[in-house]
Length: 205
Image (tube, rainbow, N blue to C red; front, side, top):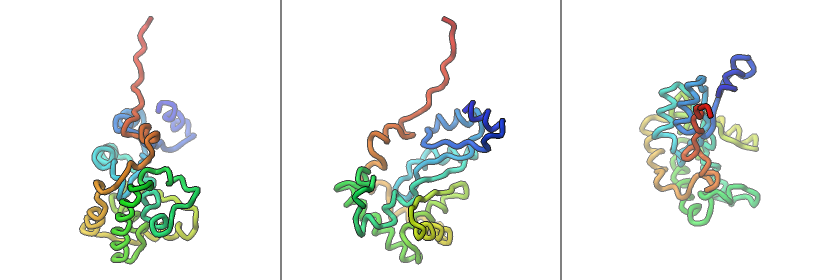
């Protein structure tokens, strides 16, 4: 953070952001130089940031940039109604494997029913739900197709009331989600476990 602060002061960068950072890391980094944004996974079926990270960022005035707001593609539906492509990395994702995937398919169909009610696609509803979590949240859905890009942009037109948001949240209870959001090796390096060590105090030999 000290080096990044120097780059800001030299005019080489304008803002500083962190990804998958623990609350303690965020607090200590922000004390060195204001953090502009934190990138974390956040969607209807991954709400791990809500208990601690989201309130902390709001306390410090840090924006949230959620990745995978479409549930790593689950809420787009293709993997559910068709099949996962042979070369898809999701074949190694716990939530898309075996019994977990069969259980998680029911979540998609619940959201699909609500999307019909709101006149949009399940993916648009999933993104709209994230967008409505606050003005300090800017989701970054990924796609490789122009059509999907336009569909994603259409999510900003989906208007949701507080009652709608509760209904959508209740349709996808996090306790119903089967499997970790990422494989165990990656999970062990995520913000749940990783924390940058505080600087060691120098002592003379």
